[in-house]
Image 1: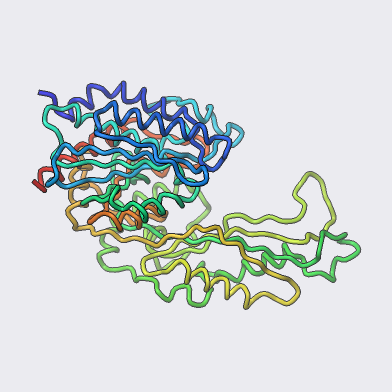
Image 2 (image 1 turned 180 degrees about the vertical axis):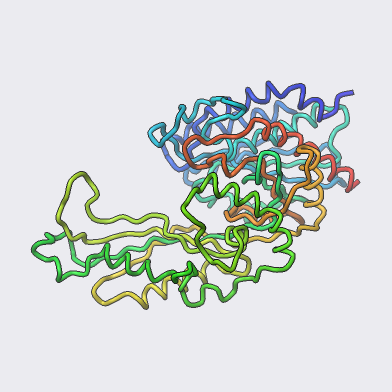
Length: 461
């Protein structure tokens, strides 16, 4: 008698081959020249959904030529059965070998039990682990006791603007009892973790200007407030000497770290410290010293300078006073912080500390998402914990992730419960050169999704 667990193990070599096929498609949503690649991947995924036995699969084109959604559904459990919605994204960040890759970024390469390729961990791992889990269920003699919806996004790496609009316009298409967001990372190859908190995000670009054009520094130096210098002076006043944000009102709505948080996060601190030592490898920890590393990374807000540019940066010297300088700034937010309010606090603070020798302008990129806290003791989280325990042979620990997954807030609008199930690793170098996964994570992810569907179906008959 065929069961999904055995089917997945029997077919894992084929699953890996198909995973590599998807990895080779350059689904770079941020670069218009790859729009055809993204569209081709959407059609490839649609065909796979139909081939594995889903009742329907649609490629949904987005406005203004944006990257499509792929939406599939299996309704075989009946109208009275619960519904699980699974979300993943299939687009990736740009990658070129000159960025520091040891292998061709879009040619999957397996070395010492790891697969290297752009999208390997973020997030085609999750796309394929979930689709192969569904294939395993639909090939089994006993079918799932839950209905399944799958939504695969093609522009997560470029803002997710259109999926939010789709949810707003067509909530019934994604309505479910449980939404599973399959993205992100676990703590270690042999230690799964469940994320119960995500930080929110807001962003802007700051432009500082003074003269109407670049000037000869010998002719005019000493009479003009150099925009690069002025920008650095402003930036230096956004934090105090201990790393805390100096913006008035920034911390007003920040939720305190609770006793439950501290108990849960103490268990992940050794793993996070090991990962920090190996991945970050900075001379020393920095930040709010009264908070532990997991608290700084997941339960406290930040204000980060992501990029700064201005003036002449080519070879040799050019004695110029630049007309302007720019900084890109993002904030990671925690529960109860409103992205718009935080942004307004920062803008007002910068205006207040700006001297009359320069001008400042702001550009807002539309990046904004609220932080999320999920119920650690809810039925969906319990099912996920059982799934990880089955697949890894170890009970998961719980963590608050430092990153943002904006779709989480949208899923909370269409599902009664939300759970985040991640199968990658932070050390997998998502967005960077030599992105990779442990192959065992792929196979464990498939088994974990199979088990999650099993547990939810048995518990909700």
